[in-house]
Image (cartoon, rainbow, N blue to C red):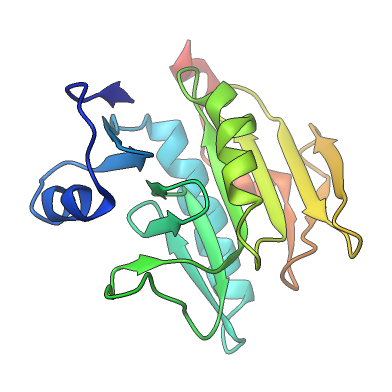
Length: 193
């Protein structure tokens, strides 16, 4: 991600710029940050996971979104584009908008070298302020490694990690099980070196 010029923008100014832009930007409490393009592995992983979830959740009260769906996190004043997001219907929109959601139960981010610290720390802290949010999955694009965090009834977060392609990722927020081999299907780790 690249920082735009250092000036404060209101969320309304950001949205006006964003809907007319050919590039995607995140908004973080007054700053507009250009989102750089992903690698083939990054895109393959997001596609694999979103496609699997979309298939497993068909005819159920969930919608699966990938990459281009904007999310508003009001408590942290962040507009962002999660790699994969699952929302339980009905969709909740940012006030006055029909293109920005607010109620994901599940978010997955594919880690890149430039964003992995942000995705693990500040972004996860921001996501935890969303009342409906229950599960966060971080997927490494450089090796087979998945981190899963899910919220328990008493607002604690349970952490698990997986590295074996034969392991099944049992999601807690939606009725789905996903094999790690399916998440990493067609991913070429040698291409990223």
